[in-house]
Image 1 (cartoon, rainbow, N blue to C red):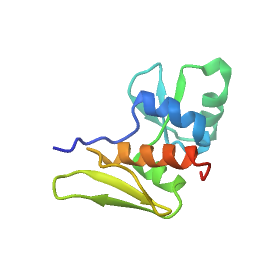
Image 2: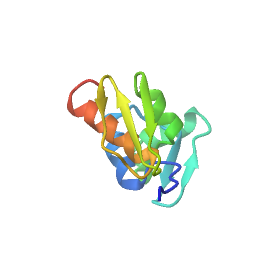
Image 3: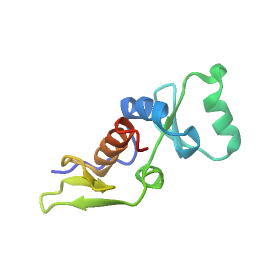
Image 4: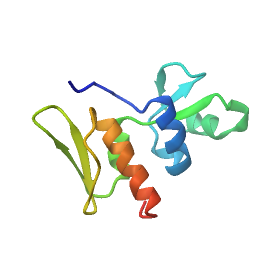
Amino acid sequence: MATIKSYTDLEQSKKLAEILPIESADLYYYKYGLPHFIEGQGDYESIRSDKYHDYIPCWSLAALLNVLPSSTLDSSDNHRYRFRCMERYTEWYDNAIDACVAMIEKLHELKIL
């Protein structure tokens, strides 16, 4: 059965922080706890600063969708998800976040994103 996942996990967040603009994140992990919503530009500056190395940007599905050009989320009858973007597909995943992260990583490797 599909798992409900509302945001990128810590490992995905660290990887995406190397690929995506930090401004595209709508959440952040603080000291590896639960994510917090970003409320204003001041929080972005804190995340960027070396002084706040415990802040790690985090993305919701809505934020991830904003960075993918013309993507489509497909779902199967058995509650699996995959992304289609620029005539490319991901494998099937148990949740939409994992499928979206896989597509971002694939497009980054191809130097399309």
